[in-house]
Length: 334
Length: 293
Image 1 (tube, one colour):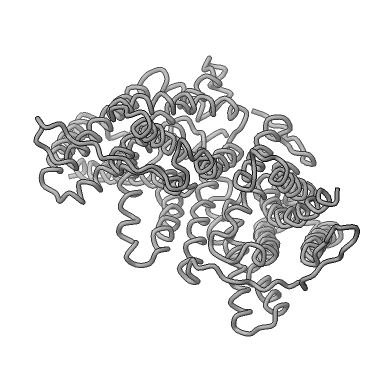
Image 2 (image 1 turned 90 degrees about the horizontal axis):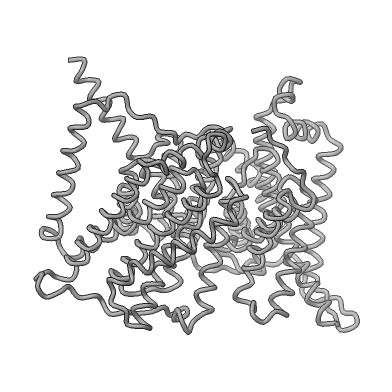
């Protein structure tokens, strides 16, 4: 692979003004995100919480696909493993729920690393094939080990309750928790990408041979990219378990993996805002189109993915960037 | 012993179905370098078209002929409309476009025909040939025969016709083919049409066994991937051989390895894909690609 459409050129207009606006937008978004649970109905708050959960998972997928250029159709697997790790700990061993987050992240990090090693020899299409097959294999595997996973019935858990001193309702507490964790994950990913690691990942995405010549250890960074991306998905899975308080194999079919990939593609591969936009897409497209027909969400997904590939390969985030640059252009002309 | 032979025969029967879909995958891969994740769904959609004809009272074989014609045209249309704009794009783009097609076709079939399962008539008579405690069902025999016939026809097409020669030229070197006056883009469209047609055959063969519903081909696709990987993604003969091997391996593993049983059988294609890719990435019959970095 010599070139990808994903190479992001920093926008020429990102001068003082644009940066200024970016910080203002970020502050506004943060304020809105913090105020949201106190203004909206509990059901809406739940939906926003799920957007954050998907955004966390997409953060990992973005790292792997968008930044490291490795195709994965099995990201739902790690989401499922994180969910199950948290659920099993809470259900079987009565672990306090907050502790299940680091544990789920550790488990998925290790498993992501383990999967990264055999996939070192695979590229492009073959990687997509293998990861997709693994995602399909996961469901019967979860059903088989019923004594641990609850089989096809899954595990039903008690909802975590907010501590009394906060005075918050359950949905508000879970939302704020998810917001904090998502923000922390976002910060980790952001600083990871701005470091030496990020540059190494971009180099191996854009040209493996050149990267190797420049001293990037391909094997190490590829497996680490898998491990990190799995870890973010694991964090998302654990929070998903707290919010839904139920896990079953049928919520983690290969469709979840495909939907996550669709989400990050539509949100914008390799962009900072992509995961959040993609999370909203994955959450709300089914909600809005379900009323039409039970098949409508996937029709919309399919059409949108293809349309985005043709019309806006950088996704919604890229579109927003383009609009911003256009506005700056108009302003300069005046 | 008779039980074992019986299992092998059953395996060959299912393997022939995987071989059909694998053949379709390989056809497209050879011409365009695309692994078409939507191949199974296109086959399922074709099968629904056939079902619609049969349901409307058209005799089976006439319905089949109509379906094959429609699938051929549909495959060419998809190449023209959806694939042409991203021709030569990076693999990630191609994978995503065919996945979009996968979701779209699957959901469209569910929208049109609902997700309820439907009976699909078997073109072959019931009953079986029996000898020494082993039964060879007419339907198994029929499936094997059809796949062999498709294979043979494709061989004749590629080996002895002008179009086949042009198509092979395009597959081996599109640039040179274009320079010698071959309409490359027409041949690519033809490749997609042929693949859709072969896929439709496999769909019609699989429908009486699995019952017709929009998610029918999801499982078959994985086996077809395994078959194509095992045989080599650029080898039609390999796809058929791979399909038969995977079918037999799956049936035997399900019957004799208790840890696998019938529920974890889908682990067999996964294992096949991973082992082949790790130890012989070009597959049994494929050609190793030499790449200049």
